[in-house]
Image (cartoon, helix red, strand yellow):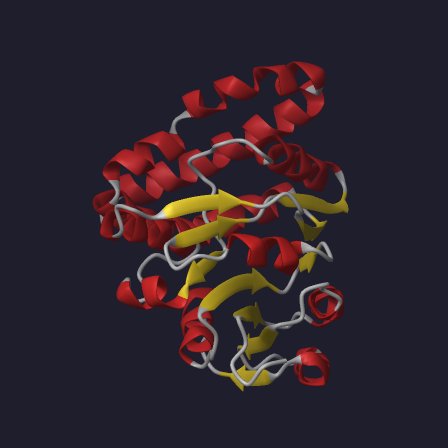
Length: 267
């Protein structure tokens, strides 16, 4: 590795001991090696720190929310490009190699995601993400940014927890009219674990507190992202898998209801 790596891979963690090992192993097994690995943790109580210290070039214990930890990782990075990952993700071995071929100071890169896990709701999440692979969708945001562009936007905003990736993407697009978006072929595999319906709704309930601010900042993007019409182009997928389509629309409908309740309720 050169003194100054080309890509900084930033992984955020909290009590991630059951999944972090596979995540870091998939990063270390990349065919492209010119990168540094930064893990930023929220003082985990499990084996996270022990696992991270074995693989990370830099292990930092600081920050609470994911957006805070991502910003901390970015501020401690040495590379010209920043790749943000979660601890429950596993990378195909050629992801960084494919990214390297598309690196450009004015280009951000989207990586397709495929979910896996146990149970019906994990299958529904797999069904949803599989539809987006290779398709243009308003809910897809880049995972890699040139550091200069990231810093110009002041990084992730802690006022929009849970949707900080879409907020950052929209702000960067508006700041950089010549921004180019590329998407590679190899996917990230997202470990959903044993996903439950109430878990999905509870998570969205927590994130929904940020949607009022997100809607104020990006009203047009919000309309497109919340509209059920965006799913019309996937109608063939719904016909092929009616039970998964039912689960998909149930969870999406529940999430939308939680979001609108949060936006409309009085403080």
